Length: 322
Image (cartoon, rainbow, N blue to C red; front, side):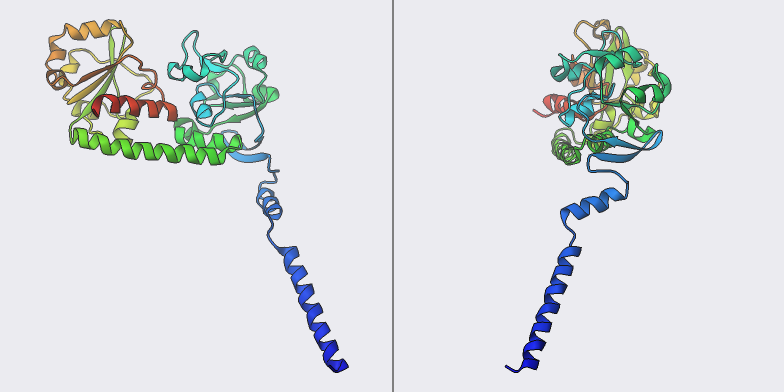
């Protein structure tokens, strides 16, 4: 081989090596991608920047002692046990007690001394800050504090997504929601086969008073919006749910044209006896057709959350689908 040819080959090989090294240096390695992705928010992999009621905030995703009063449902769904649970006096969210029976209570208005005693490293609050004893700044001095937007406060599915980001559990959040959608689809099919176009209503009995669920009241969204159960005319006429839930008279129940009725009442509620002795109640289509279903644990029906919704679906299937 001539000297000129040999030099040409060496030059070509050197050029190829240089180009290869340059390409490797510019390759999007996982480390480079992490840097780029987090650089957009100027955060590290152990932090997340989210919109909140207080504007954009950056929160560590490594919190272990979490306090999210009244939204323990979302925490438990993601495998997180809170340091304290929401309560009004002795009243708690009963349907969560299987997992929270050993967790101490904290009053609904978040007294500062109680918050301090639980030593949280993350506090999650609703957007309505006026309901709490302290201010955002007060709580933020104790621990990193995230205030949900109005949209997130009102939408439990959004809460799962946001909590997943706050706690570094985005994959878990995605799976939880996906599994729920599958449960809804399966239940909807079974209920349609069992009920066809028959209508359904739910009544909460508290003491000697009766509360009909509007279409968007608590768990009613589950059976009307998600499961596609048909709405009786009386419920349609109630319109959107107000913040204040007003009882309905027993005389008004004569207009309840539902084919099936869920009665939600603790054992021994006076209202159950009142209905048993009422000719008005006995004249309703559901009573005449023996389609009254008494459920003695109403707590999940009067809450919103993924665990509450799943329990409500199970309640419905247990009596509607045989």
